Amino acid sequence: MNVLLIGSGGREHALAWKLAASPMLDRLFAAPGNPGIAQHAVCVALDAGDNNAVVAFCKDKEIDLVVVGPEAPLVAGLADALNAAGIRTFGPSAAAARLEGSKGFTKDMCARYGIPTAAGQRFNNAVKAKAYLRQVGAPVVVKADGLAAGKGVTVAETLEQAMAAVEECFEGAFGEAGAEVVIEEKLVGEEASFFCICDGTTAVPFGTAQDHKAVGEGDTGPNTGGMGAYSPAPVMTEETTARVMREIVEPTLKGMAEMGSPFTGVLFVGLMITAEGPKLIEFNVRFGDPECQVLMMRLKDDLLVLLNAAVDGQLSHVSARWRDEAALTVVMAAKGYPGTPEKGTEIKGVEEAGAAEGVRIIHAGTALDGERLVASGGRVLNVTALASTVTDARDAAYAAVDLIDWPGGFCRRDIGWRAVAREKRV
Ligand code: AMP
Ligand code: GLY
Image 1: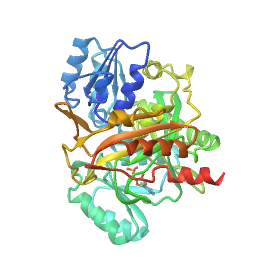
Image 2: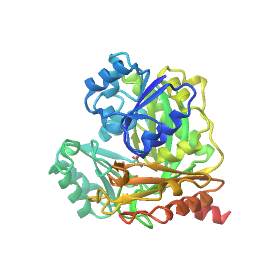
Image 3: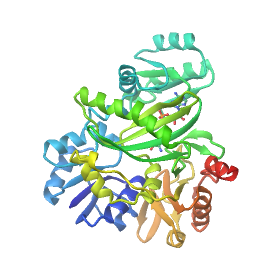
């Protein structure tokens, strides 16, 4: 098979590595890719926002499957354009991608199908939103409706913070994404990410992970796309997983199909495990980044076989198998992130760092400047390790971090702290 992978981050490097290992693969292309992905794929300068250009490329190269990494092209209808041209695509239609593209849409769907989530309401003007805030008080959560690159959510501890977040949204801080807001109760508990691959009617559990969103140690400071992750998430017991499938995932797939927009692709279920049980925080319609990196380290099966089964509506015949070991990834970011990251600083020692047993250095925001590897984004490297426990995986990952010579970068030193503390107790 010839496969085109859309994206350029650490998530896509991990996917490219697994796809390249498939005996079914003939040629792998990546658009636009990165220097890590280039070890496994032919990187092409193709604009994922230009549906016609992607379709033309696929026809020219006889692409049998397109795998879409990030959410933006999905929400913009790339899968629709490809499917209309007869090109098989792993990823939801624009209508199904509303599960991530509109928090208000998801809130309404949860209400309609009795899916456990934070109680909340949607508003399209500041006056009504503020009146509601006065009524419910703080703590409370304010969210821009649309895609805001992970920055549209404010967990407000005071009414003033919540009011300011509402104003910010309606004043255009998130553009069109903030034309509506969702205001909801603050959930209390432990967060977990749960993944399923879906073929429109069947969902197959596809691993659990926990990530660290805050930029600073001890989960302090502004939110990022994720500063590290590990898999599996110990809080996702078999019983909790079964409950999430029954109470959240299955009704969602049924609801989407009933609404005429069956969901195909990765359903990323962001959960809060509360005293009353698991509740939905949000859906994403793609793999998490950096969660995908730790999932791929643990996946035993041929990824390409599984993605094909999803596209062909054959998931009721398959399941995914995982290594018993734990995987952990430390994100190395460029100084300045999540504000304005410094670009172009040189990174050395990547090869040496990746030589240790069980360690893999995944490229997220790197570029080549002649022979030199340089930083070209906010999150730059994902230093990833597989070991028998989270503690051992963490130690291996940080040993590798220490071999990377990059004065322009930084990382959190406490990735996996919750699971490490749990392992100490038992
Ligand atoms: P989201 O982009 O919806 O995942 O939100 C980003 C982060 O905000 C989540 O990972 C949670 O840590 C937090 N968050 C979002 N909604 C809630 C909620 N209802 N209660 C508590 N925390 C929340
Ligand atoms: N790491 C969180 C996300 O991919 O949305």
